[in-house]
Amino acid sequence: MLDSTDPRPTIILVDDDAALRAALKFNLEIEGFHVETCESGEALLLRDLPSGRACVVLDYNLPGITGLDALSQLRRRQVDLPALIITSTPSLHVRERIRAAGADLIEKPLLGDALVGGIREALAR
Image (tube, rainbow, N blue to C red; front, side, top):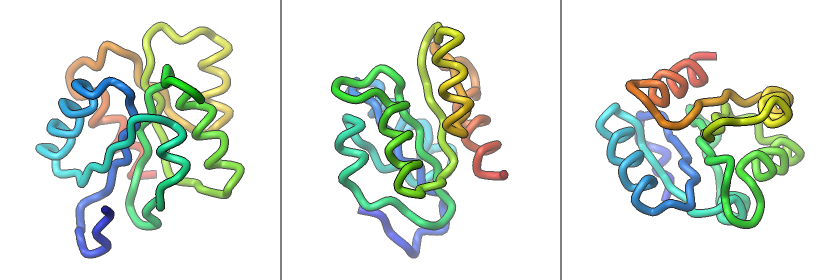
């Protein structure tokens, strides 16, 4: 549940891998973010999204609709939260689609502070 009194930026993390989702949530919370999670793109599309300082982080390879397809549906709904897509070895076509959706790409494996740095950059824009 999103807490409107929480001053921390909210990260909506969407990944179907429960262990990775838990690890990323833990890491992002240590970095000072409020983290809400979803296990699928469909679950993301059903939830209320924050209107304040927030960012959506989506795995590209989700069961059902991809993370990028879920983001495209959010964009059609006029949801303009900053977004990052995480994936490994994206093709040129996928890179172009991510760019066209107004999202940033973070490649797996997630090394160092690539994800946290990408989130901070996206929130600063």
